[in-house]
Image 1 (tube, rainbow, N blue to C red):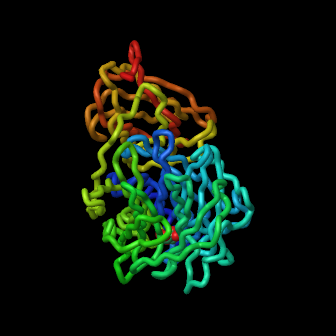
Image 2 (cartoon, protein in one colour):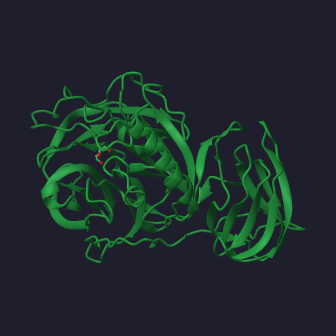
Image 3 (tube, rainbow, N blue to C red):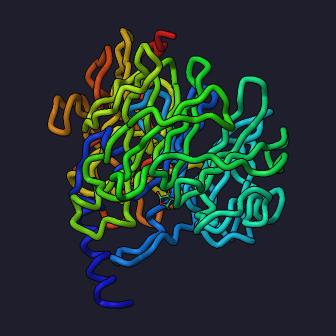
Length: 460
Ligand code: FUB
């Protein structure tokens, strides 16, 4: 391994692994480098699927070499649950070598994910659960340069798929990049894994990449990243048809703070509010590492004006309102959080994910934990201990201490165990911090936690 790489790993462990804290919503899931979000609203949660920039190297000239897609989800827009890598190539699609910028949609009880094999073609994989496993149903690209209507084009980037199903049931895929005349839309059959007719050419002023379609009050909004000359803003066009007649309508959002490079977003409605998920380079900037190939996700609320135009987004560091509380009386996955310091996640041997390797002074914040009027008296945590303690604090990592769970030393322990401590009686909505005190030789792993009272009963 080269000296430079070793230095980078040491730097990253020091900064990213233990000492960097960041605020939502300019950064969500701040312990991972993720990009190119695509949204799926499904069964009361929003799932974001992202290019996994942790696959890219720390070198300045890494290039986009992502080979996996990561999924995170939320039921309240503040706390995000990490589902880890849900799709990887060539493991899950033998013909593909890269996974750029996914598209995602559900139809007839199935989930369909589309992805760029770099910028050379578009693949499709399917699952019955939003967090996979995803299988390759056709064993080859869905869209290639040979797909009728893709060519002629000048230097077409054949990538950035976005799928949309209209109210009449017709599905469309928008894709393409690198030129004002390189926007394409193609009809998909109901099976969502085959096309119906040739791709149609659309044109967009200063078009670069990352097209996204949403429909609002009967109008189709086609948003996209503009080219470097136009500052890689997110611009949009509107039309009364999904396949023609789009005219330029304005700016959804300028360059996000701490980005100054490519831009890629999703627009979706969740629980009555519209949102704009995007990427920027806040984490890499804070770490002082090369930023180009190390992006992170962010989210903002999006509003339409009364005349149907989009109110231009002003980026904030903490602008999204939590839309639901976290129920502490049921199992809460430890990899669900709004902010953190020093968190790492891994695939859990009991299924799902767990957090791991928490060190002295690290913490996990869970926003808006709704204890209701039933006084919580006991905290239970499913973990592999190492002798360190978990302090339960309210409001901040140094806020009111309501209980301490001492974890026992379980050297070489392979099984997660549930262990409990008493807590001061807590009611109402609270921001809860799990603060780690002390270090052990083996990593502290937490799978899930919950609270209970004498007669535990949640309001609903
Ligand atoms: O992540 C690789 C590429 O960068 C995407 O396909 C583009 O949209 C840009 O974000």
